[in-house]
Image (tube, rainbow, N blue to C red; front, side, top):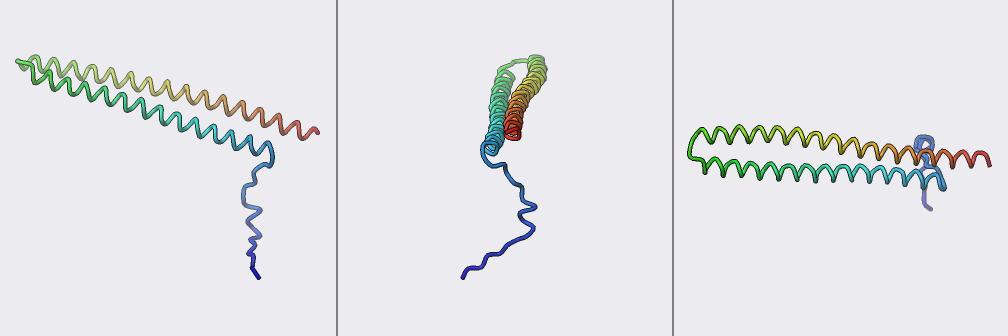
Length: 129
């Protein structure tokens, strides 16, 4: 004979998912939100890697130009130009990241809001019937 162990506190403390279309709608909404988060993370990684590759190429170019220059004055000018361009590139990349994050957050918030309205309408229709 098998024994079952019942926990009287478990049913009261465990979260309960809505059953039926509301539950599916809630799960799909959560899955879409996670997909948005992953899309944002991957897009950010692609942007960061592209930027790092560009900056690395510019570092190599600086060293090649420094080794090819004949005078110390040319080296100093190359070095100053390199850092001026680097600061400009970093500020442009920070602006691009900020714009991209704001755009993706706006899209995710709009989608979550639309899904919340749909769910609210479904629940209201069921309560009326």
